[in-house]
Length: 117
Image (tube, rainbow, N blue to C red; front, top):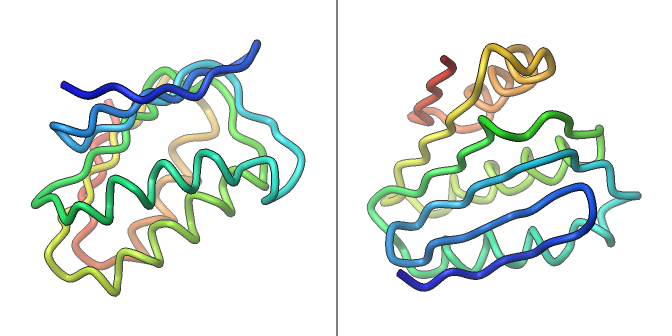
């Protein structure tokens, strides 16, 4: 279990490279794509290992601003080129932004599995 972590006062992004799982926690409201670059690089690094399944766990992410949604959308689009990766996105009904925003990811990547509880 190789853990990589990006942490700031309001959020934590933890990646377990063995299980290809990325856990998002807290509130992500960074300013633009350049500030999201470390997270994008982490996601791309895991995708580059060509796991059979990659999981994005957003259940503990209370807020994600439009720049963050754009970053996630671009990452999901990039997976279209990697035919072998099944993307599983975990969301929560207790986070109001997730229902609508995460459903849009399904349109970007046919075969994306979305579980919102």
